Image (cartoon, rainbow, N blue to C red; front, side, top):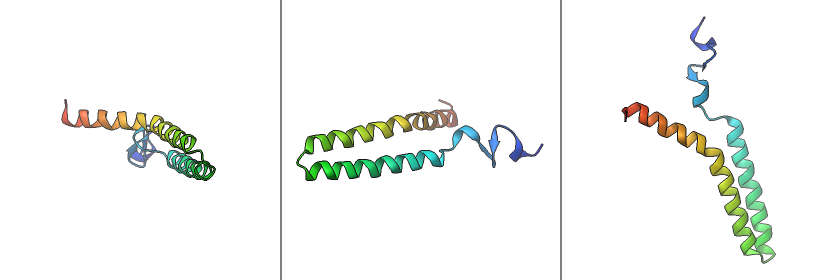
Length: 82
């Protein structure tokens, strides 16, 4: 069995350690959608709702990123053996 065909490795990297392209596209879609909604709300005089919309988008993206941030800190911890 070659290295690239092992079930835990994809092209020489561990399968769980890479950020998917789908996540990047989801983050971009949320950013575009939030910016359009915020512009519409600001032009209609609802700045408070625009702020809450941008805050909700930020929180949503942060929840998507938490597992990757946790994995980063675990990798750093293992690297320095803390």
